[in-house]
Image (cartoon, rainbow over all chains, first blue to last red; front, side):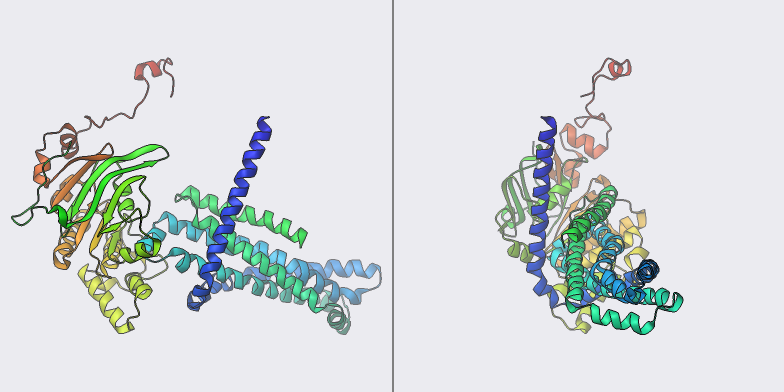
Length: 250
Length: 284
């Protein structure tokens, strides 16, 4: 009986939390058109979330692509179809690995930075100070960070996939000796625009999820050192969990 | 119990109708614990008003109620003629443009330089040409003695400097009401003296109203015209600093004299000491 009651309470709390996140998203979307008029603020956040994440995204993309090239080559060689390596790597990267791995890295690098930055702004009264200066912190601080993340994420996923393909080509063609012409031509003929679109849609959804959860957790963080730490941890844990569920359904 | 109302100087008699903040029968509780119960207060226009009281009496909460950051449970708070319980968000923001607030830690925006911090309200609310923004910011920074620090980042400032920059930012829109939340905490004597002089000078030079929340009895006595002493959710005394020094009340005497024990007990409520040491007492 106690277990059922606890489960019920937990379910109600989850629904209330979900409702609160959705309401927060609606508020962000309402403020977004006006925030777009001050694109310099958004550009700054694209730089913070995107450009500063480039090194880790590119490095990871290169190594994931190289591993994919090696494993793909060894598998395809058994069936004598090494030429399909380009297709396998491209579909794997563009449709799945690009959006998902970029989203995981983005949550770890940019998501935590967003949550802790906003949490610290809350803890040091910076958000209250803005309120007192008659400046809406949602419009001035949260929305540019949210939009910056939403814009940066698909771009990073595209860069990840590109570098990943380069890594797969490096191992498959340069080291394992797959024919370069076959590698690229099979990729071009087998990868359709819908595959690319699927990857773009996924990375956009992950971008919205990551930016939303990070700014939500940071904005509503308890204004203490412990509260900021908890907000950062919750951002990563929630996002990893949400990504896996969303990726399974997508 | 509420005492005599008075103020410093021959022209300092309080005029209740000239109050910029009028609080009537204010009730406010946090998690069921009452912070204010029937609080009445009139903050006179054009004066430096100090709000004092032991820790945990809700001084900062009172500021949050006055500035509309939290809503009262019952009673009324009128600020410059606006009822803070009924004010719409847009009107609240218009009202806040007429207020400046100095937070305990300065609350400077850490990603902006000193100059940009002071320019922040101007850039957000006005469309002034850059040359004019620069002149206004430098004027305010000069007033707090930090024009030379305009290009520094908040992380490079000391606690006293941060508060002075925050003060420059608070006055950059020429507010009518300037609110200070514990402005003396953690300052060295020199910075403290500078802040004290600035509070008085800005109040007199700009003709504004200042509300200072502090429990630093000696410092605040040198600058305040009127002092309100809060305890137990209500005003227990009000008057000029000299009047409060000789106020016939135990709690006022304890607070003004800094006595460890009195109506505000030294010990937090606890079970019997010896009984607990001997393992007989029960923890609540």
